[in-house]
Length: 327
Image (cartoon, rainbow, N blue to C red; front, side, top):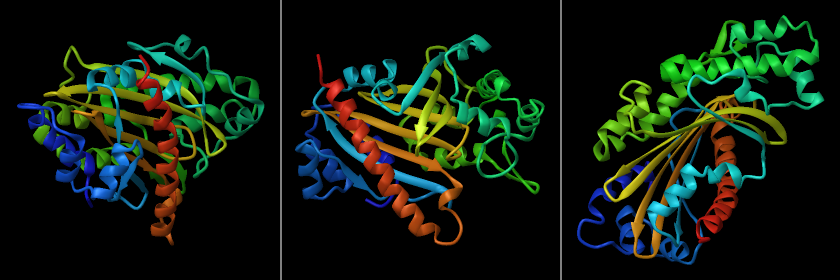
């Protein structure tokens, strides 16, 4: 099972329903799950597979589980109703972004006093994720905390508009000081390469993953939103782009966090939803990039981080599955 597990499952997906919907075990067996893991999934548990890291900053996790509802219903609940966000208790605030967006789109964004103090004194380094120009804008506040919320709304709007018009090319690097920078766009490109097998399943969708917004179809199902999210005990500002595609009788969806203000760099998740007799088989992969797992002892740090992330995802998906199974 070493490899991009979602890619293997998605490659199987186009032919799975051409004659008769398969049993989950037949799919899992072809993918390479052991009989023990197959039974765990049938019993309503989660199975985790090793997923290669794309760089020394990449926490990579793959999970598979079963939902006792049809793929079409589960896709609707998971994507269109943004069930992942609604069910996550760590989401402190959230707002949708449409069209060109506006500062009013971020009207619900309000920081705590301690957050304002951190952002009011932002500087190049590893603690916060801002470009050189964004840091200059925050510095012009002169440490006055009352102006932080408004300035961050401008920064988030600018990030959203730049990504929406230019895709990955519009993501400004994070200024780390001493002429160093973190290229978050390159990290998302690495995550895209890890899903390369999508090209065989749906070439247009894979190309969109790499070149958005170029080639964006008029009927693309996509959602943008901002969120204030508690990550590792610290409220974090996140911009997310979610989009999905039907591939034969299966679904593929991508959830891309193209801006994160602190804690980690960026994140991209790709999932396949495959109809089986028992309901919907879900195979989910996640690449989260952070400097906290690079350098000396990075391998051990990544191993610990991946186990922790897998545990958190299992807890979240338990709630998603329970909600998706409700009529």
